[in-house]
Length: 263
Ligand SMILES: [Zn+2]
Ligand SMILES: [Zn+2]
Image 1 (cartoon, rainbow, N blue to C red):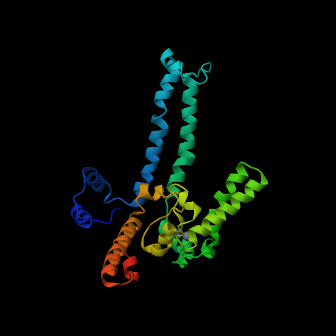
Image 2: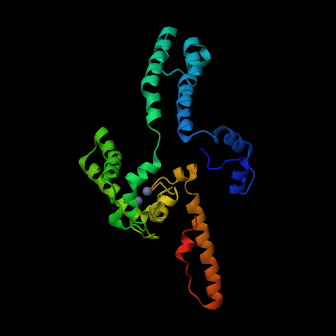
Image 3: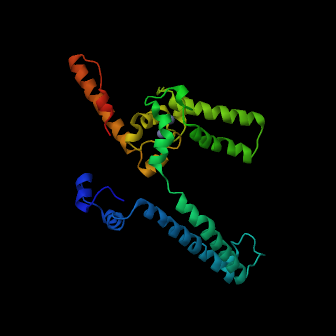
């Protein structure tokens, strides 16, 4: 459900006309619930399951010299009935497992924040010890990815110790509250780091910003770093203006807390 009742409201809020694609999306989605829109995923998954393999299945059944040279196991030939059986099994799994999973996996961001994640946000200006400061359920869920990899693909014991230690160091550095220019993580592409995650804590529930601590391009793709980018631009503008003013008046740069809460 969109937060605007009419196209005029949306255009007034954005300060510009809607594009053709945005108008189409508005007309389709404005009066539908988020849950109903989310459930469309079942249709898209069904279409992808059913339609994307078709060109490859045609190649498999027709077996012409044109495509046979690209066949990885050319001696294997499947019949139409084997292909149909495979599709029927996939469909059964789709309706029994994949579809119902979509219906119950609707993300409840507000609920998760209020019941679980808000504890991690008690520190609006995080410190190193606040990295694992969270609800027990969050610690449990976030611990799964750290231990799942080594559990599935066991490596050398020292590699495991190093991995667990590095995961902690990464979380502590992200929450340390200092944007140190000599931090080695500055050389990791797309790495968020302390300054990036500090903004996530700073705005907290007010703004869905900067979810990533490592892969910041995800926030860029989903547009969840817009407040942060705006905030950074505003701060550098204030610094520049203050520097110019300071040069003239001999004053030091300063900005108020209200300036920081700019998004
Ligand atoms: Zn955090
Ligand atoms: Zn958070």
